[in-house]
Length: 600
Image 1 (cartoon, one colour):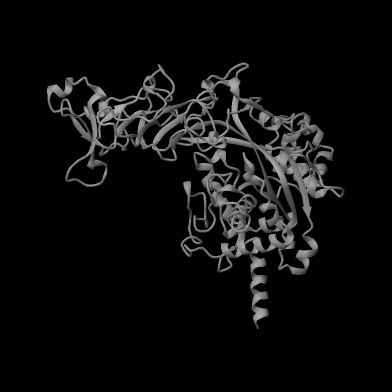
Image 2 (cartoon, one colour):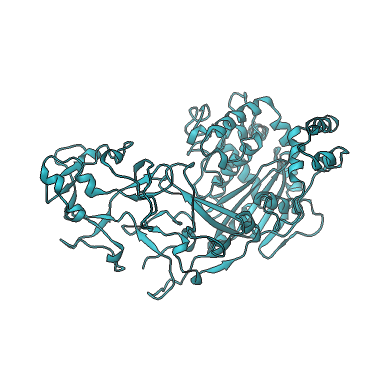
């Protein structure tokens, strides 16, 4: 029996991921192998609807004093090839040999540890052990070695004397026939195909799968591209009517809109849309957006097409616009923080850019594991339930409770800033790369608004970790940046009491948030890697970041909702020479002028 936290069964050690536990290497099987009766139902209608109606169930959990009869979830040992740390003997551990204890060497009794390499299918997200017995015999020098049928029963994994510390300095040798081969070149393309090794066509817990003809590549078992989990989450929010602004109302009330909506494929549709754009001074994209939104049900729980983030934005927007009491329910407690008067007396311009601040003293987040990919982000997707079907389709999920701070930005100031041709051109560089990237479809369009809000969220998370009492890795973000949305939610949600300590809400109070925001902007104005960072033509995967690196804007993988991509602090604070105006650039100028005046 091994221990794992409930939240870790979704990420980062969910289905198909390798879990290192006290020197052992394990992999969680798909939920089709689990005992469904030991799981419990989680209700999140919006998330279930967005995931196609799949039922959400939490993995079985027990107290810290579990026994052998306690409910659990099945893991398999992977890699199954082990070697002894003392005598270097190798052994392939079969599932029938598992006793519940850590494996020990049959020769000397020493601890057995996993081999460090695995073989991953480059197309279909399969994974398998490297067949070390075949690798050791892949360069035979005599007939005995060709006929050796001992396989992996008498292999050793040892360093090669008097050689370098590279992979060529390690070898797998057969003690019976003296066949051997170093690990030099094992990570190169087609290294396994050249010795006749094919993909087994499945996952480590599957048997008798048809062989796969796609190329295998050997990776270190701890490499990040061995497993890329895909997790969806949703906040538990009150049922609200989708917010509509005056522009939406104007487009839908136009006398030609009803005809276009009823006959979108008509030959006249393009001309009618152009007329609407001309008379209302709107763009073609805005009209098409309203056409696509036609016919959607108003209830977010009943609509399968409404974005999860869109519904959450509507909930926050209702709170911002409500003139009565604060809105919410037991799992969504929101309080408006009246920053206007305090910031007007003590401010240096942030009030012109920040519209409102909401303190979320309690929220509920449901996270569901959909599945995973291996090797590349465009590889085949493997569902978390490989046995799903009629009446059996369910996904592992957890519910987490926490708190947060929501910041809404001034729409007028944002529109004026994002219409600057210099800003548009800079964002277009990242959008072009996003469109060419194999993972571009998993990221939002790189608009100036999206890049600004995402980067600002990262800067605030880094700064809030100093005073909120939470580590940087405990904070999360939700960025609302599509269409007329302009807000960020920084929150913490944990499957235990650690997500509701109150420190984050305290940091959102008007007398503290202003200082936190200014300190975050000041820290972002200079990176320890400048001028290299600020002048960088591209950083990160597929160069989808500009002026953002680990020293200034990147966050932990558990915190970022966009894989640490689509970041550029220049859009927040501007360039030193003023060639690119940052959204908060004037705030920093006023602050520095105020400090200089006070010292004069």
